[in-house]
Length: 353
Picture 1 (cartoon, rainbow, N blue to C red):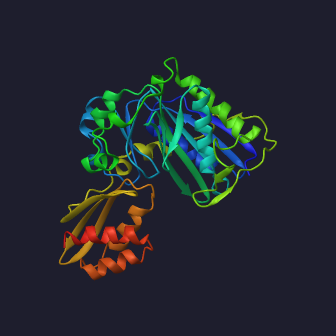
Picture 2: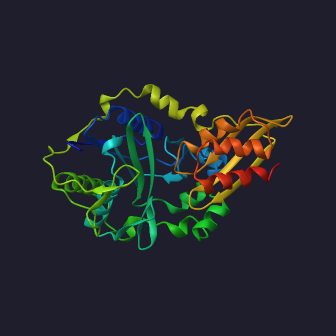
Picture 3: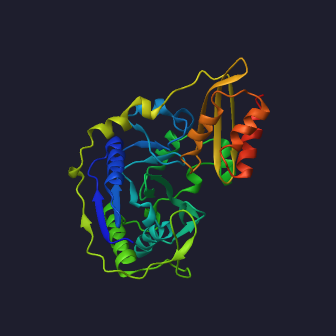
């Protein structure tokens, strides 16, 4: 049960500092606590943990124009951040994680400002049928976070300039470009500022977790973690929201990690086989294999799947096995993936045999 609410606001626009602070907050959050972290990055493309930077972003152009490439801990797809965007992160213990309740905070904040916000699918928030917020998720050592973007006045030209989504991804979403499926919140509230939205989020956090505001237009049900349904908890006596200062944390080592080439780019294989495809609804995947004398010496998997563990698990079971259909089948079966997903991956790998 959430008993303490804390808000942390970063004053830095450096993506490596801000991602480091996010990880430090995850390590810091205790049982019964919820931390709302608000932050902004300047001219940054942030890719999911298992994405291929060269395919998701025009890395050379971004670097030439003074931008930053960053890689987060969570899965999912690439996003562009500038100072017209506000990022939020809800951090808590896994047992207190409640996605529906967390999304209710975002909805209530936006609706209080006159924005017609509504959920779409599992991970997006829309206004007038267009996306203004994407969400991603991460869990480790009994702690979880849910973070996302809130597009207030993002430079749409920069979104198209730096991001390079695959044609398959756009086709799967039934759109011709990134620009056609996103919207800035200032279109609905021209006077909206980052500060006003931040204040609305903190007020909504109090309303949902202290006053006991439920899920709008729902039969008082909420998600518990990422599985199952439970009754929304009754209002509780929670002390006022407390401010948590970024200065409390030593971020030097974590910032260096997020800024390092090893984290941003990883190992690029001299692959001998490469296959890729997109499989709605779970995402796109690219698999590179270094095959020698019929044996997969190394495998590299890139994906925008929300499951941040998928890529490393597939890489582990493919490395060192014979590059034959029966061996691939045994390897993928050992992962206990959903049947359809395992079959799709097997069929994809077999196309290069």
